[in-house]
Amino acid sequence: MNVPTDASNGPALPPQGILGRSVLVVEDSKSQRAFAVELIREMGAPRVFEAGNGVEALAVLEREPGIDLVFCDLEMPQMDGMALIGEMAARSINPYLIILSAHETVVLESVRLMATTYGISFSGIIAKPLTRDKIIQALSATPPRAAPGPGRPGDPACFTDLEIRRGMKRGEFVCFYQPQITMREGRLDGVEALVRWRHPERGVLSPASFLPQIEKIPELMSRFTLQILEQAAAQWHAWRSSGLVLEMSVNLSATSLSTAGFADRIMEAAAQHDLPPESLMLEITESASVSNLGHTLANLARLRMRGFKLSIDDFGTGYATYAQLERIPFNELKIDISITRDLPASRRHAILAKSLLQLAQDFHLTTVAEGIETQECWDTLKRLGCDRGQGYFMARPMPGDQLLAWSQLDRSHL
Image (spheres, one colour):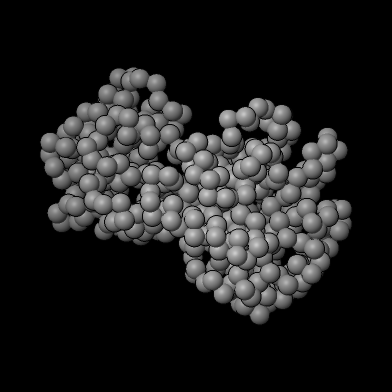
C-alpha cells in the first residue's frame, strides 16, 4: 500500500474525468495494479492510492475520506470486490465506483445492479486490459457529485427534519427540467420535473441527499410534493405564455400515494394553479404501486378519472409485477436507465428493451426511455419503436428559464 503520489497535469479530459480526483486502485495483481496507478497518475489525478484486496482498500478509505473514485477488481484474496462493495455500503462510504474485470457481461451486470441497489455511485465497467480510452469512456457519462459539506453528500441522515422544513420555507428546493423528445420527429414534447436542493452551504444537491429523510414523514412528503407541483405549474404557465406547451411529468412518492385522500390534494392544487389535468403526467415507481394497495389504488383511480395521466417509472427494475399494468390505469411506461445504459452493445439489454416496448404496445401505453447517453442508444430505441426519450444525449436537466432557448436549438442529428 503506497502513500499518495503527486501527478502532473495530463491531457484534457471530460469535466467529470480524472483531473482533481483522489483515486484508489484495488487490484491483487501487482503488475496490473502498478500499470493502473501509473496510467491514472499520467492522466492527471493529484492523489493515487492502491490496495491489493478489499481489506486493504477499506483501511485506505477509512483513513482517507477524500477519495472519490475507486477502480476495483472483482477476484481478490481475503476480501473480493463484491464483498468490498457490500462493506462500503454498510459503512456509508460512497465514492464513484468503476469495476475492472474480464468476466462475462451477465456476471458484471449483476455486480452493477448489486452496487446500485446498495446506493453506490456506479460509474461503469471496464473490461481488462485497462486503457486510457476505456477510463475516459467510463467517466464521460458520470454526473458531477454534489458540493461537499458536513456528512456525506449522499447520506440521507445528513439533514434533520428541521433543516428540510427550513429549506422548504425559504424556497431552496427547486425544479430542474429534463426534456423528453419524440423519437420519430425529434420534437420537444414534454419535460420531467426533477427536484434539487439549492443548499446555502453545500450547493446544489440531488434528491438522494434528502428525499429518503422526507419520505419517512408522510405529512412532510405530501407537503413537499404539493410545493413541487405548485412550482412546476407556475413554470408550465410561463412556458405557455411564450408559446411552448408541454406535458409536465412530476414524480409521486409511495408515502403520499398510500395516504387516504391524497388524490384530492393533487386535484385541488392543480385546479388552484390552473394546470389542466391532461397536461400533467404523474410518475409512480413499481414499489409505490404495490405499497398499501387499497389507498394507492383509490388515489390513482381517482386521478385517472379526473383526467390526469399516470406513468409507471423504472418498470422491470423493482417488483416486476406485470399485474400492476392490469390493475392500475397507466398511460405510459418508462424504461429505466439500467436497461438503456448499455444499448446497443448488450444483447441482453436489447432483448429486454424490445420486450418492454412490445408489452407497452400490447397494453396501449406510450413509452419513454430514460438515460439515453449516446447516438447509438437513441438509434436502437428509435428502431425498436420507442415513442420518446430523455437523457444526457439530448439535454441535461436545466432550470426552467433556460428551456425556451434550448427548445430553439437544432436537433437535426436526432
